[in-house]
Length: 228
Image 1 (cartoon, rainbow, N blue to C red):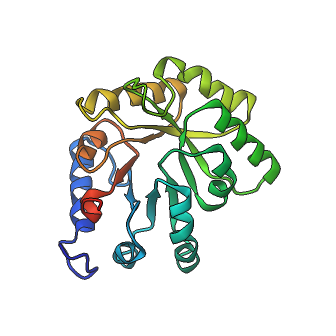
Image 2 (tube, rainbow, N blue to C red):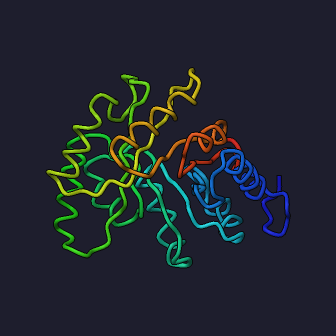
């Protein structure tokens, strides 16, 4: 399908329309959630039509790939908001802090301490990425994230001991389970902690996520087509 910005039926406009319909059905405001276009593995040529259409929020999985694509794009469009949605190695944290506006994958104590040290080094008032804690809602041993039973303690470590500001929670439900219960759990956990951000929902389930309170949906396939 063409992504020409003048075409009223582009993947971006179609996804936005579905998003607005889901928000209306849930009785939520039209601006209650943000669409993050997940551009991992996609070249600049695939990103350009979305930028031409005015879209400015994008997500990447890897620091190195983002570093190759986004500095020039951010220089050309100073209102781009770039999210890291994949795992962050501690030795890449400094580079990530310089490149990304939001880090959605804070998932362990070692990384929290590294980010806190970088924030301290930057000094009071310096720009620092907004942070989401990744929750392993399915308690899958192969997946990153804080298990729900450990979340309150980890949140306390981040905020009380380390002085990090936590904007929200993020989850990736197990592929072989219904996503809805995981989204409902993330909303419950966020309410208990008093954080407002909820990054949940992808191309196959974002309408369910919006119905359960998502503030950020991460859309790749619906916008760019299947990954190579």
